Amino acid sequence: MNLIAMHCNPQHAGQALVPEQIEQLCAALPGWQIIDQHLVKTFEFVDYYETLAFVNALAWIAHHEDHHPDLSVHYNRVRAEWSTHDAGHLTLNDFICAAKCQALFTQNS
Image 1 (cartoon, one colour):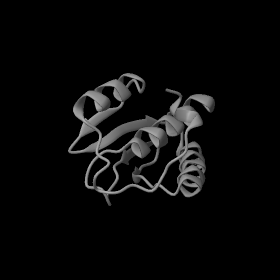
Image 2 (tube, helix red, strand yellow):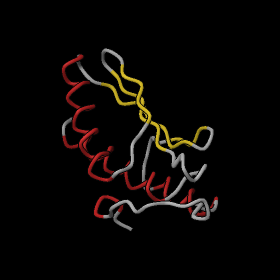
Image 3 (spheres, helix red, strand yellow):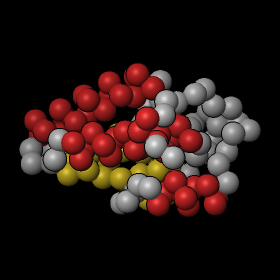
């Protein structure tokens, strides 16, 4: 499954991923963790400028996909957390956006 090529769809409460699906999708995203029904990773940068450039590019992706992460922004790192709040659990949208977030970081590293 090519998560980067996929696009988010509106989610509803009944579209939860089962643990087996979550495990399989996590295997495609090294370094990401599941913490309290959130898909989480911290990205490190050289300085504040690179940190904010990443945040701004990620904001564009989130806007385009209409699926938005919770971000914790610091001088040289960003913690991104994806979760489908409307559904109350992880959905495919979270993994699609995490894959796009990872690709953005990898492309600019």
